[in-house]
Image 1 (cartoon, one colour):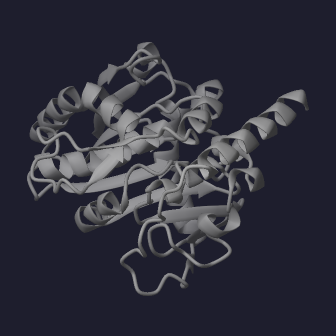
Image 2 (cartoon, rainbow, N blue to C red):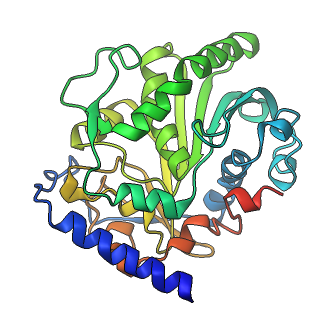
Length: 312
């Protein structure tokens, strides 16, 4: 109880801090109708399970992921073949790359981070954005900006991951690349989607599935992402706070593809980017961090929890 009380006080302080900094809200997003949402079927929800397990496995140490011996998460996708692991769970988040024969796809998954620390960082008034690295993201307009910390973290592993992805595509004649992550790992996966789209042949399909992802960039980033990536789902669980930070009034905007889990077995595909008007979508159901629940960030995502303590 003391922890929760301290957390609530901390959140309130963060809100007051950022509220004192004037910043115009992003302009209206691109879709004309943001009021129509679609309930997902039981089959669609069940189909997400392997991706959730991949996200869960990203929290496991490379020493056990290398042999795909990370317990329940690895056992849930037994045919997956790991080819590269890395990270130190500190300056570089864990990550792994491998081939998934069942889908003929190369999978890249990134670890997240402590949700309390992430929330602290992303509600700070000094959150900065920067232009994308022109070497990693060639040809992108200078109006596109993303969270500086996310961009810096992504740059640490982007080149080595790209080379491994290219090698696996060649080795297995893979037809797609799938980018996966939870929390900070979801932000890295979102950046990876555009990075791969710009650096791989157009014949390679790009798919992204993320969980509890914070806002990554500005409206120009969202527009670029939506123009390049059509197969993307960012899954939010109930009252999770992380997807509503950094604030829109700080210039940030989500990309398309929200799936909002309202309760076990009940989830909805929300329209638009960060402008859905239905009460069942995160932007309406969690208007500020005081009305959310940080514990929902860990799950359950259709019965599966994601985080360091769930690497079993």
